[in-house]
Image (cartoon, rainbow, N blue to C red):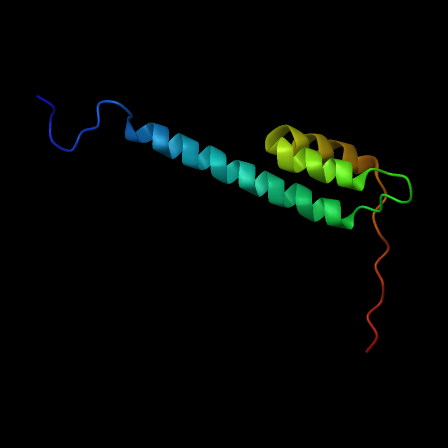
Length: 82
């Protein structure tokens, strides 16, 4: 007989680990997306390619973009008319 309240198939710690990993992946993707919006890719550059890579391969694409984007120029801030 199975003890009441105990799941013998999947321990609760697995749920916690997967939830933390999913949250970390989401935070990593959001950070990479924010950085993607600030990078000036210029004409002929593949900004859309980076975005697709981040969507299709969230962990590898986001990490690769964040590493590569250190060498890419950022867009100049435009002054807001007051």
